Image (cartoon, rainbow, N blue to C red; front, top):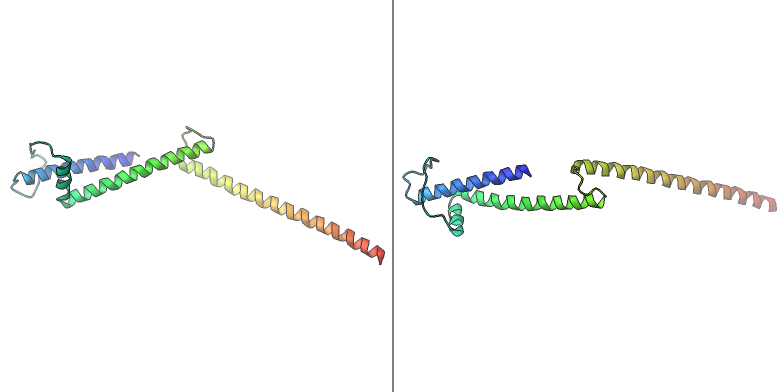
Length: 148
């Protein structure tokens, strides 16, 4: 989450710089080169003006698109965290500070052990049925032999 916060912070900084560059160009700046030392005073831009200002340059367009994507990514991260919390609660670990990789390592080990135990039970049941069939076959054969 800290990385996402850093990306958002950098995008906000880029947005501010792009808006300052727009104001500089809009105020009749002499060159196309923007210098951070130049401060353009004036009334704040409305939301619509900011949007148009950002859309007026390639860097601004990139910034707007990146802000949308980061916002969607944040929503997905929050949803994932919520679902992971629900999963921890389901497995009886609510509020426990456990990493997803730890939980899934435990879960994989459990599944592998369960599958191995299940295979052993099935093999044992098959052997039991086989012994029962052999014993029944021997008794039936012996009984059949007595009559003939």
